[in-house]
Figure 1: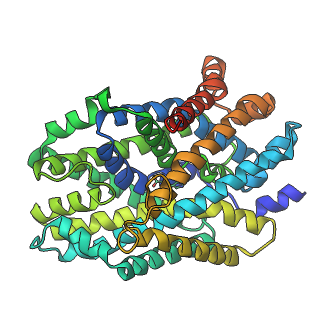
Figure 2 (figure 1 turned 90 degrees about the vertical axis):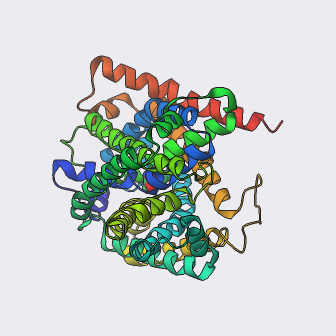
Figure 3 (figure 1 turned 30 degrees about the vertical axis):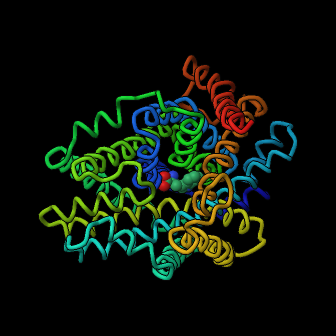
Length: 452
Ligand code: TRP
């Protein structure tokens, strides 16, 4: 009865494609198009990409399936899903704290995510009016030098996110994603073709795909793993929360594989669109968070109809960011509203106000606070990014894998994994039980060891 009530407070998504679209909408975002290329660039290319892809396959995919299993069987927010999965497996209710650590990660991530997404919104207009008179690196400096400018766009983006979440994510988002995400895919393919024709494509290929392990450190590993979790939206309950809306007859295994493949494809295409331009125009591959803005604008400035295609690209990127940001806010809002602590609208407003405040620090990292370091010589934005992506998400993911692999009743798991059986099931189970937790633990260990 109690559970029934909670279920009704969320509604459920109809149609086979809706979950795939929503989960892909969550996964595909700034992480793929902004994060992946710049992190590949600062970490030297090929080796990072190879470690990233390995993490996606052996850690990401098994954990993604685990999150869906936990979320879908109870149909509630991550904290309550963990609680009910633990209770029904006769385990301690302390497992629900994984849900709490996830919510904190979501808040940290959204605070800087919104600042970057705000820059995307700003670039819709910059790309429309850019005449190429000033270089695109100068243009990026102008945009980020002004803290007021960044804060305005940050505010707009967080208001957009909060409005959608407070209305309830089953209303309309699916439809938006269904039309606009394929368009983003098409424009990315177009940019890759542009890179083949006008850029240094073979140089980009060898940068991204011929690994040079001579500079690989524990830093490379932890960044690649963090990027894998971030890109797949794992470790904080986004996928768990969306799994809660997934219809029972939908297949968990094949759906997960689709989401993971689409996400990875978009990241690789973003790399193949951006690096040919970087090498052709002598831009700096390791220049950091500005990479995508500088290189993409350079390409549009050169291109016929660039002033039309450019804004379109940034509109679509902003939509992709929005369909991700709502999944960062949803778990905490779903929790507060299903517990009847706050109404959906009020929860969304209050939490996003707090996130907005936290985001100011990230906005200032580009200008006033650019020299202020918080931990490990990182500025505010990099500190948030580090704490959330490289610590909280892998930790949350590891705990989810340990829970499903070692503590959850197997019959409950099998009820959900309707299309995975026999040998595939055993392989999946082996990865959840051993490979994923040990992989994360090992990367943590080697990272911590470097300080001693
Ligand atoms: N995956 C999204 C991206 O690549 C961001 C995101 C959405 C996310 N929900 C998340 C990251 C949950 C970590 C955890 O842009």
